[in-house]
Amino acid sequence: MEYNGWKNYETWNVALWIGNDEGLYNFAREHGSYVALRDDLRKLNITETPDGVAYNDSGLDLEALEECVEELSDA
Image 1 (cartoon, rainbow, N blue to C red):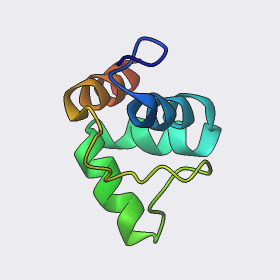
Image 2: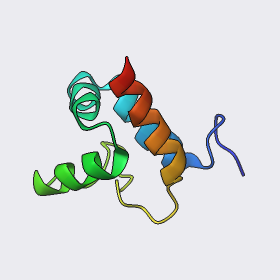
Image 3: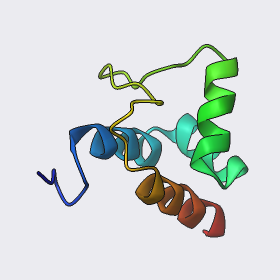
């Protein structure tokens, strides 16, 4: 079941925070890859969004999140 045009709520929520939190947005732009972003967030002990969705949730649509972060780095 889709959620606001995304595969599911979890993917939407992660993308929402990446796109709407200035610090996370800028951090994502520096990485160019969702997996690299996720791994560096883990090193900083940031494992989930403020809404409680894990950045490594097994239900995340990684392909869509990769595209999302790649588009930010192209901006």
